[in-house]
Length: 168
Image (cartoon, rainbow, N blue to C red; front, side, top):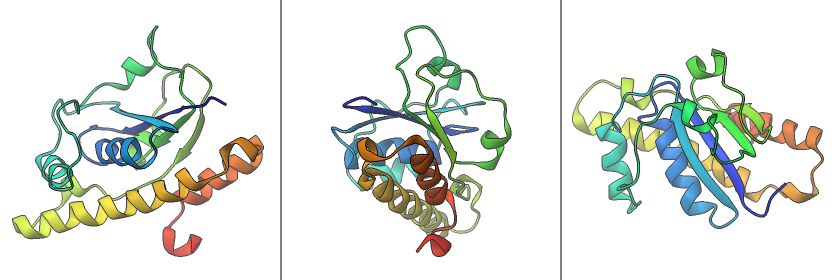
């Protein structure tokens, strides 16, 4: 594997979970990881709840955009080392052929964009899902990638995707 690992996070709409994961990993994993996000049916805009939370936490948001996963299967796309699906819908879809033959895993999260209630309750749901994504990415970043064989690494990636209360 490379000095810098390219990681793609997938969600159907690419407006909340995958964008938060991209932002978290680009901060927490720098310079070892370069994160991207995309969706099978992108919304075209970042969810306001996700954008507000990321800005509140001082993430750079000016380059975030909702994009189709086809961008990462096209000629000239970065070779990917890891691809993670973050929603059950994207996990069940037939994905493109990714350059680089990446390792894949499903890390399911509840969709904060589907939250209902007061503005404060919706913001709390975004913060909750953000925290879950951040915890999984902290585990991922701490893996000794260079010293793990592919089977062991795949098991670790799958374990990260399981319910955190079971993995603890």
